[in-house]
Structures are given as structure tokens and as C-alpha cells.
Amino acid sequence: MKGWQFVDTNKPLELVEKEDPKAEAGKVVIDMKVAGLCHSDVGVLRGEGWKALLGELFVIMGHEIAGVISEVGDGVTDYKVGDKVAVCPTGPSGTAPGYAYDGGFGTKVLAPAEDLVRIPDGVSFAAAAAGTDAGMTSYHAAFNKGGIKKGMKVGMIGIGGLGQVALEAAIAQDIEVYAIDTNPKARELAKDLGAAGVYENVKEIAEFEPEVIIDYAGFDITTREALESVAFQGKVVLVGMGKLETTVNVTSMITKQATLVGSNGGTKQDIEDMYTLMAEGKVSPKITEITFDEIPEGIQMLEDNKVTGRLVANMEE
Image 1 (cartoon, helix red, strand yellow):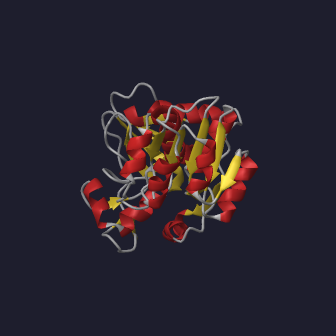
Image 2 (image 1 turned 90 degrees about the horizontal axis):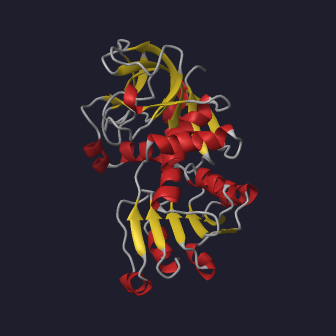
């Protein structure tokens, strides 16, 4: 098998060949079809602090996985060869592909069966890969941590790979969403998806008194201004890790009795719920495809903010 391997911070990914993995007890081998690329991949490559999240180096990156099972280990009874599956990167095993073990930027992956999610009919491998992180993380932050539901006014900051999926899911459930993004293309996308309003600055939505604001960007000022713009006793959910530190106006946070909640990843159920919306045609994430060979260039595209929607690598091209 081949794969793009993390070597060290600020070093380019290294293309390597390894012996094909063999199925182990409780695990399956997945032949990769599509791997998703994520802004956190940029973080791993550029930020020294991310190394604490990695297991034994060197590791093939890629935590958004969609493929077909080619081998099943002892004790695995719920899945068989030929099943179309994705891997929950924050699943019950507590181990994440691309971090704790070789991930989706390789042509084969050995993954714990307990972390698998079936890909239903009507959901492409590309959408399924995006759904494992962009879908799961955005859904969990909005609907579980944020508790958004019909009748609420909600702000969403960052209509990129995460935000656009959450926006579609919210609109499918008749939730009034005000979208914020500095990128004009992202604002246009939010408008096309049906956002109630589209803005460049977080403070512009304060007049609507949103009960919940989800910050999918996390660029310091976005979180601070979200806390200043949310309604009385409102909630801000922080998901994005654009910057790993932020400052807040404690006066407005205290007087508003606002709540700031962190959200990371999600559950297999979040992925299944997102796949259901995809299969029903209610969520269709905007996807840009590249090839396996273009994965390093794809990460650079993300770093340069040149991707609208979600970026995936078709491993078969």
C-alpha cells in the first residue's frame, strides 16, 4: 500500500510504501475509496502543539475515511467483506485514524470494527467521507451541544466545510439561520442554501438576538464577538480551531449570563443522522475532488483558503 505520512511539524508529507495491513481481532481492513481533507490537517502540519494528539510517529494522516471492507478479523460479526463503510474518528475505541494509527491518506486502513458506520444507498463515498468529520462534528455541535431546533434564531460563523453542512441540516429542519463569513464565495453559498441572512461581521446579527451561535471558525475575534452578539442567557458553541487562544469580554458574558461551550467531534449516531439527511437529499455538501497524488497540494489549498465547501481525495484516480 501507499500513503502520505506525517514526518514532523512544518515538514512536507512523505509518500511511503508499506506492507498491506492484515485483519486483526476486532478490526477490519478497508480499501480506501475517498479520503476527506480537513483544516485540522493543516493544523497538524503547521502547529507544534498538535503533535501531542498524535500516537507513535510516523503516521499516515487522514481521519475522514470511506471505503469497502476487504478483510474481516476474528470476532467481527456485524460486518462482512464488500460492505461500504466509514470510520467514526471519535468512536467507541477512543483511537482516531490519522492520529493514533495509519489513516485515510493511505490506500488501505486497518480500523476497529466498533468505530464503523455503514454507508447507506444514495450516499456517495465522497459525501460519506465528508460526513465522518464535517457532517458529524457540525451536527454534534449544532444539534447536540447547541440544542438548536425549529423556532430558534441561530447564528453560524464560518460557512466552510463544517458550517455549510450544518447550515443545510438546520434549514432542512426549518431553523432560522444567520450566516457569517469573511469570504464572499462562502456568503454567496450560504445565501444559495437558504440562510435567513448573510453577513461579514458577527456583530451584525446581534439585532436578531440569536439564542445560539455556533463558531465553526474559531479565529479569536469570532468567539469574542459571538459572546457579545448572542441573546440574553444565550449559548455560544466553539468548534473551530483557527486560533488556539482567545480573549473574551467578561463584562458582556457575565451581564448576559451567556454560556460558552466547547464541542469536539461527535458520535456514530451523529454520522448516521447526517447520512440519513444525505440519503433523503436534504443535505448535499459542496465537494471539491482531487486525486491521491494531489493530497499535499490539497492541504496547501486549505491553508490558503482556496476551497469552498469540503475537499476530498478520490483514492482510485
